[in-house]
Image 1 (cartoon, helix red, strand yellow):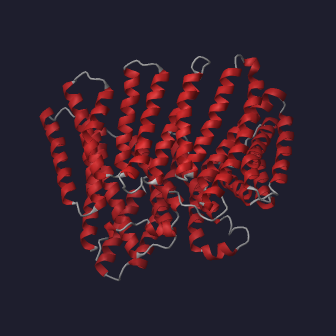
Image 2: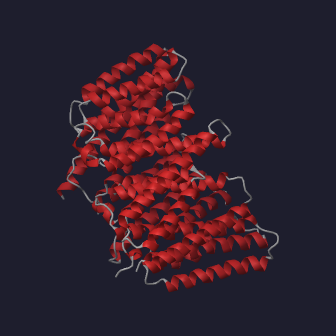
Image 3: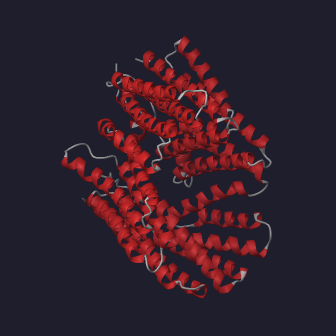
Length: 303
Length: 317
């Protein structure tokens, strides 16, 4: 008999049928594994964050090293159980971050914070490829993006350059997950994962545009935002992902309104006129987006 | 490749995206009216006219018109009505009741199904904020989760009803979302030392009892009649109930997670997972305890859960 943990507990949810005894067992086991590991890892991270004086520095490093070895052993022992194996590798990757942070805490290396995240990304890269587990890919993406953002701040580069580099990192991840599985003839990346990457890229675009929009910077900001929204539209069209396609169109509308407000709003007296045009643009844009989405949906259904 | 169904409705994500965009347009228009006229009565006049326009436009079944124009106009209408009546009077309950009344009328009278669902969603969402805050919020949290359960227990009968049948998924989504929001509002006010501590604790206990009841029901339904397993399962469920009674948010998240899985409600399940994560983080962050004790309690509970996983894995082969 197949162990319930090896079954997909959410298959019945996709099919819209009531869960069976096996689905319940599988659901409970998956929940216990994921929540239990999450609690244990959070506890370990909090324990070392407390920086307890009574523990010698070698003991601290030794403890994390032992935990790393234990999770490595667990990863080897659970090779036959896919979820448990992937969760073990994820735990190992989190512990690497704890180990690096602890080294920095004990020896006060004086290194910039972005180096911690960069080293973390580099150290776990191979495991991320081996596990091929979307939550672990998310951790890898988060550490890489954090390293890029912090590097931009700590190395003193201009905000427009930072925005460009951050957007490029997001787009590099998107293109890799979009095109590499096709080139390597592997299973396509889950749609939710690509959607999360696009949401991250769009959020960065919106935040930077709102914070930095001035007449002198609007051109460079627009070029980067255009790059993000063009990728979203092309991906959405090619892969028939209507959510990403709509996100691209909404980002385009946001960019148009942002440019209009930046260029026309020069004093408080012009506020009502600027708002009037912005409202008109938003309404027209929304109408056109709804029209485009409805038509595209029909087109996708026919294909 | 994205799976495309033959259902002519737009997906929930797209509806939410376009509704949020509509809300932004509504805020822009409201600001514009405020800057141009500076009269509360003008808000009321504009709001009522916009409500009429959205009613007129919702007669059409075209999705383009519904989402491109009708929704922003409807949301602008409600915002303007609220601001207008709020400016004319001083109490917030009056304008809220007027907005709820307008939304309820739209739910019953509007021609388009999507506008009916949007207005029903607004009614469900605003109801907890009328009347005496703490007591009503507490009742709402419990009432909405019970309503969510009822959509499962009486789903066949409800689907057969002319109006409720088509709005069942909206009712499920709305009741679950606003049960979570109400509990979180109560938690925030309790945490900031406002009134209502007793209400929050009482909700925690009621929800924990519901977790126990649901757990025992599911155990009886799915167990193979093995006495020992039934006994161990019941003990574990009671322990879960006791553990979750400490915090109403965690109890609600676990209840919602189990219920949404039972209902095969994907939307509810994703919401419950996110809410559980939020509830756990907020509980541990706000607990008045040294970090070292928090870390030890986390490690101990994590180890216990993993041991339980191992035990289940061994015994369920």
